[in-house]
Amino acid sequence: MAAKPGAWCVPCLASIEILQELCREEELTCRALGISRNILNEYEVEYLCGYRKTKGTDFYLVKWKGWPASTNTWEPRKHLRSVQLVRQFQEDKTRFLESLKGRRWASERPGKEAEAMTYVIQKGKQRIALRRWEEELNRKKTHQGRVLVENEVDFELPPTDFHYINQYRPTPGIELDQEPLIGCDCLDCMQGKCCPEEAGAKFAFSERGQLCIEPGKPIFECNSSCHCGPQCPNRVVQKGTRYDLCIFRTRDGRGWGVKTLQSIRKKSFVMEYVGEVITSEEADRRGQLYDSKGVTYLFDLDYVEDEYTVDAGRFGNISHFVNHSCDPNLQVYNVFIDSLDTRLPRIALFSTRAIKAGEELTFDYQMKGSGDTSINESSEVNGPARKLYRMVCKCGSASCRGYMN
Image 1 (cartoon, rainbow, N blue to C red):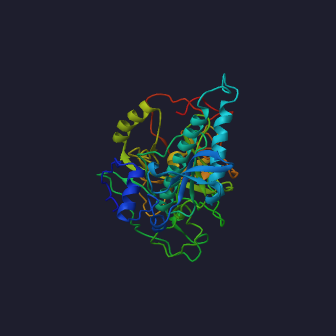
Image 2 (image 1 turned 90 degrees about the vertical axis):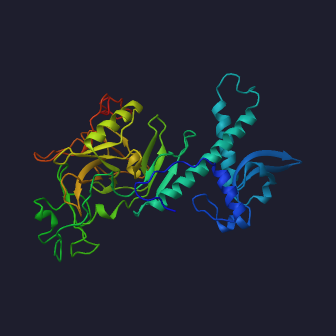
Image 3 (image 1 turned 30 degrees about the horizontal axis):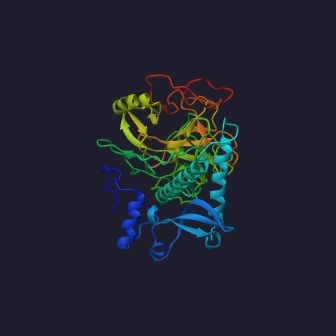
């Protein structure tokens, strides 16, 4: 059963293996646990966790999906239909043994085969957890682009207290007005007197959906009351992320990051920054907690007034994992669609330059890293909430300021 909005959620005390076994005993299916009707009726290899050679035949110790480790069995190579699983097992074992090279006494290190199997099992369990998380993220997201997850760096598992959402989640006492009072009657929104002009702003997009306004300028898109259809060129941010993105583990101690799996043109919409909408007073309280942990997820909505803040710490989308850089490839813009409340703009991230597939996505937590930031006299580009102490920057760019705040 889906939890009601605002309801408390607590981690289950039972392990995944116990829950899978209960499903099998009761003949129940559960997509989140990976238990399908096929799994109930036949055995499926989850991962390989051991190897031995007997009388010239290769045997692998198999962990069966939906069954506890106590039911693992040794199977000859010819019984294993998945070439990928065998290759992954061999690659993991080789990677561990190669990591010992160059270490003192590594060649005579006792029990290194057992250590290698421990490493292989840990990686196998981790991949299952990451794959399950990836499937959950793709079930919950409403945008076109896929979300992938990878960790080839350490044994870090998915965060246990992060919940994927697609739009702002107001905390008690905050009302989000999502009913537009008026919409346009344009036949051609690029030629008529459309929503941006009515709001005293410039039309933000080209016919191809590329941004054509300066940083610091607001974006007014057509809304649900407008007569134009979904193909209107003034509907970009509301369509959501269209690129395939990957949450990955960084190799330089910056935790998780996000990279694009597709090339992105300059001045293209990439993603929104969403989370809980809280008051500035609550942001100060949470900010102290985040400062003590050396992290930050607070984003002030200070387009006109500094009254509300977005906190993506526990509730957010893929932008939760985007790292800071003093020379970023993403820039923040304030966006108004169904709500014209200037205290509650939506936060959109656009590319500042062409981005290659495989490149990490970053934005400047101070919004001063793109080199072309222009702040309007009457409005400011959003920035993270004020911090109580300076956080060291690890972006590694040539223009690094040394601190993120």
